[in-house]
Image (tube, rainbow, N blue to C red):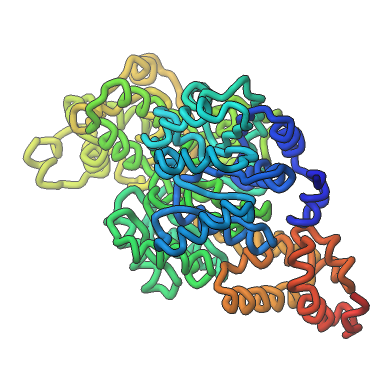
Length: 605
C-alpha cells in the first residue's frame, strides 16, 4: 500500500503538506470520521483524495454541482488519477461505462450529487462495492442555517447510519459555530475529529470603496487587471446584465451569469471563463460554488452581500492558488437599505431575525475604521493579534474630521420632517434641492433646507451612513426605510457632545498592475508569459482548462527555478510523475529558450 506522503509527491507534485492536511489524512486512514473547516484554496480536496489513493476500493464524493464534479474529475485525470462522476449530464451509454469501471475496480474516486447518493438503486450499488471512504463536500449545504441551504443534503445522515464501518469526512470553507453544530448533528458523524484550519487568507487584499458612480469605478479598476480573471457580484439579475453590457462596451471580455439564463448559456459562460476565454463574469450568487478555478485574481462586490459568510465565501474565490489577489467592495448606504428590504419580505420571523443580525455584522465590516481582516476573522471566532497590513484601512488609514455640525444638521432635518422620510429625501433637504416632494411638503421652508449645500452628495451619504452605523439613527425597514432618531442623538443635539467621522474614500483603485508584478516576483517575466501561451495551446488541444495543465503558481516557479532536467522538474511544486512524463520534454524545451539559460538546451532527462 503506498504511503500518503509518497502519493502527495508522486501524484500531485507537492513535497509537503499544509497544516493540518497530514493530521486529517491520518485520521481518515485510521478509519475515523472527520469534520474539516478550511478556507477556500487551503487544500480541502487533498484531505480526501490522498487517502482515497492510499486505501483499497473506491471513494464516494458527494458534491453539489455538476460543473464542480466535472472540473474536479478532469483535474484528477490530468494527474493520472482514475476518477469518474455519475450524474444527469451523462448519456445512458456513458453511465453504463462508469458503472462498468466501478464494478471492475478501475475507478478510485466517484463524484455524485446528493440526490443520486440517496437513490435506492445507488445505495444498493454501494453495498456491492469496496468503499474506501465517503466525503461530503460543501458540507454547509447540510445545515438549515447555512447561507446556501440545500434540502437534499439533509438526508445524507442516513448514509452514515447505513455504512457504519466506512470513514466519513465532511468539508466546508465557511461555517459559523451554529452552522458547524448543525452539520455535525445532521450528518450523524461518529465521534468525529474536528479540524478548523483557520479563516485567514493573507494573500487576499480586502478593499472597500464608497460607491460613487459605480460603473465608472468598476471600469477603472478592471482596466488595471488586464489579462487577469475576475468575478463581479451583483444582487439582481437586471443589474448583472446591465453591468456586463457596460463592461463589454468598454472592450472588456465579460459575460453575465444568473439563474434566469438557460442551462446551455450558463454552461457556455462557465466553460469560457474556466478556459480564460472570458476575463470577467458578472454574476449573482448563483455563480461560484461550482468554480474550481485557482487563478481568479479579483472578486468585486458591486453590491454589498447579505452576510459575512457570503462575503467570505465569495471573496475566497480569489487567489485560490495562494498568489496575491484582491477583494473589492463598492459600498453605499443604499445597499444596506436594499438588503433589509429583501429580508423583510420573508415570511419566517425567526429566519428574518437571524438574517437581519447577520446583515448587521456585514455592515460592521463594510463601515469599519480599523483593520477589516481583524473584524472579519473575529466574526468566525479567530483572533488576529495585530492589524493585517493588507486591507484598505491598514494601507491607507481613513482621515478623520470634526463632523459635529454636519451631524447635528442632518439629525435636525430628520426631526423637522417628522422622522417620516428616507435618506434620499433628507439629503435633498440638506442640499437645498427644490424637488416636487420637498416643495409639496413645505420642507423647502425649513431652517435646515439648503443648510448643507456646500457638501457633495457623496459626503452626505457617508455622514448619514456612519450615523446609522454608530447608532445615532436607525432605519425603519418595516416602514419604507424611513430614518428615525435614537436616544444617542440627545447628547449631540442638546448637550454639546462632539463627533468625528471618517472622510469618504472616493479615489479609484488602481493598484492592479503593482499586484501582478508582486505575484511574479523574481521570475523571468518573458518566460512566464511564454509558458502561459504554451499552457493555453496544450489546454486547447486537450479540451481542458489551462489551470488543469499547470497553475500560475507552478508556472512562476518554473520561470524562477529554470529547471534543466526531468529531476529538476519534479522539484517544482505542482509537477507530479504523470505530468512530468506527459509534458516534461516540451516544458524543458520552452524553458531552454530563456535568455536566462543562454539557450543551454534541455539537458539530460
